[in-house]
Amino acid sequence: MQTFANILEASDYKSVMVTGGDMYSGYVIAREMLKEKHKHFKHVCVGYYEENKFVKLLKKDGAEVIQLCVDDANKIVEVYRKADVVIVVPPVNEHRWGASSVAYVLAAKEAGVKGLVLCSKINAKDMRDMDFLAPLCEMEEAFDRIKDRMGAASLVRCSLHIDMMWLFRHQIASEKKICLSVDPHAKFAPMAMMDGARGLCNMLLDPKHKPGTYELTGPEKLNFKDIAHQMSSAVDKKIEYKQVKHEEVYEYLKKRGEISKNEIEFMCHMLRAVSKEIIDKRTDDLKKLLGEEPMSVKHFLKKSADEFKPKDGE
Picture 1 (tube, rainbow, N blue to C red):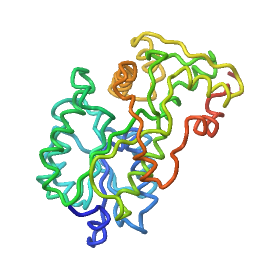
Picture 2: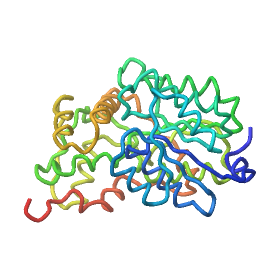
Picture 3: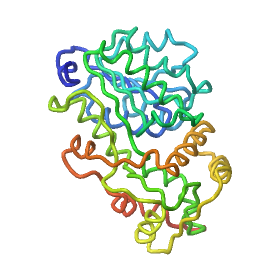
Picture 4: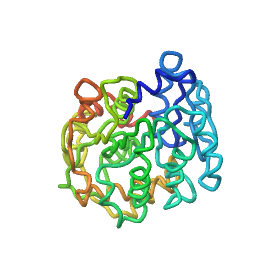
């Protein structure tokens, strides 16, 4: 099997395609690829389901944005044909998020894509019984069926990213609490999404990184009580962790209106997966891709501390 770097070097077009550009994870990955435009990529294409601020920002930064939908699998194939490498970020935003989402993976085979990356979650195979996460398992199975037909293929499983705390910034600032539906003793190894995107980009561009399965996590395992303690240090205020019901988290995020209902449901199920210790793994894969230690939660929170402090008038 070739490396992704070999594929891109041999191509005149040098195009990378990222799906899920209307979601935070897809946006961060696409933004990282755009940093390499004119240096390693000639074209950075981004697929999205609904236009939003992320799509507009990517378009402004030079991405070629294309609306995609699982209802039109032929269009997905047509768009993929223009790419040397396709990075599939699961289309959670789609109204038909479910078993039909495998179309985003299988289209790579039909389009004759040379390089394929599927982004998933740590231990997705153990999420089959969790309705809103089960499509991840099905997409991984579809990837396994076609990966040997690609010039290069990688499955990139990620831990929960610590960036998700931003969605609860108003609650933290006003109530001095982190209220989530997670067992306070359940540990996982949260990563910064920016690190994950940089690691993925390095995997594509550096020939020393071979295609395969990568499991990306942060450098240490923590529970949300630990994170609350580190948040206290970052904002110089006592922050407590409180376990609440799934429905309370859902309603809070719905009221804030910053992410779609599907994304809220996906996040709530991921929090359940943390409670069940399904994503409790910690690896050095991200460190190897970055060539340095990934950002710690402590560093991330200190860097983002102002986001979690009360603003003037609050």
